[in-house]
Length: 119
Image 1: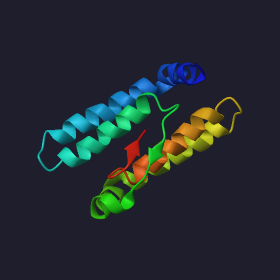
Image 2: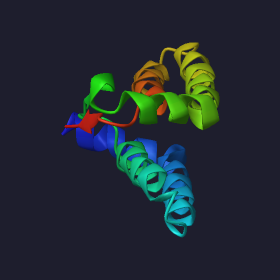
Image 3: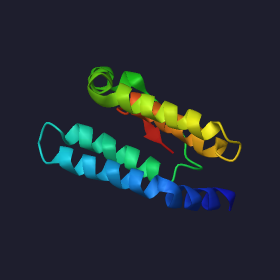
Image 4: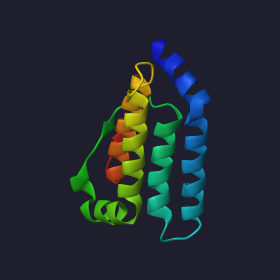
């Protein structure tokens, strides 16, 4: 019940827009054949961004190390830094700590999405 309430608050306070942004970026990347693998990773991030409470991210860098390095060099480090600052900003207030922890979870996925599982 608490996870459901936390996810509803997350959606109202910006999670819906974050998930829709990831979905739009994924759709734009899937227009090209080369961008399809990147678009699939954006869909993974969209599903986590929509309702992150109660989900875990399992990283498996060794599944696709070259793809993860390319992702990291192109856009992963910028997104990870953005999630880091958002997490720190949320954790400044006591009431924002749960949301900050979710930002840190998404930061892991922003670094190495290829081979990562959300469960």
